[in-house]
Amino acid sequence: MPTIKDVAKLAGVSTATVSRVLNGENVKEENRRRVEEAVKRLNYSTNTLARALKTNKTMTVGVIVPDLSNVFFTTIAKGIEKALHPYGYSIMVCDSDESIEGEREKIAFLKDKFVDGIIIIPVGDQQLYLKRLQDDGTPIVLVDRLIEDIQADAILVDNINGAYDAVEHLIVNGHRRIGLISGPQHIFVGKERLIGYERAYTDYQLSIDPKIIRYGDLHIESGYKLMNELLDLPSPPTAIFAANYYMSIGAIMAANERHINIPEELSFIGFDDMELTRVIKPPLTVVVQPMDKMGQAAAELIYKRMMGDNSGPFPTILRLKTQLIKRESVKKIN
Image (cartoon, helix red, strand yellow):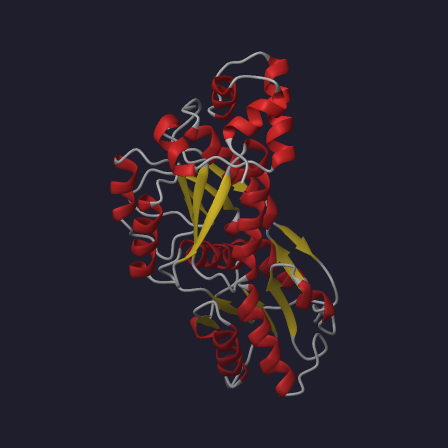
């Protein structure tokens, strides 16, 4: 295993110069280049804890997601890693298992690892223990969801207008009974997408039948169950908006089991443009979130805070636009 002396010898500099380069201190640009080249050739890595003791940085960012089996969350994490890598940062990804207790445990774990900042997709909207983390001086960036009573930087998407666009598209195609398969209302995105649904009805001066609004838990099984409930109504919807990718898949499974022809018998709009939405027959009209951009924006914001840059408003709340991709799952009716 190469040592700092080996790096110094290959670079033709002193070990003190190597140490200054590794610690991010000022050195001549030529010496920095030679040291970095030697480090690369020898595949030399410093001891993270030792460097942390000197610089008060571990060059690591903690990322907490509710469910690592969910492609939406892992795509965001990949965007974070991609954006932080050029700055020399690594990420440590943790799964909170969609529970407050799991979230608490992962935060404690990351604090023990002395991460320089934490990016979190929270599981609820009332985690006051995150306020204590802020009070300790740890930079935090929320992604996808806000938390009540906590002032924190956040990267969100425009859920309200995303849902509005979907429902409006169905309305202008003649649909009046539009079933909503919504997320839980204790989660920020569930609340916002319901607002978008209701706002579209209000703007078009249509009345809402609360019986065609169902609340799920964001999983395939939930979408399957709620779709069956909607189809079993005496007066079922002529269209469905499923406000989550996995519930969209479950809903389509239920429709397929009943041999319902989409869009001839039932129009459908889903959420997120992942592989299955393109290979399902017919290809689904969907609301698309810029998942990779969400991760990159969160990384840039946490890096800014970790560098001590507090310029601009606090909290900084960025809302990225969604896009309605129109395919073949909506039929115009009279």
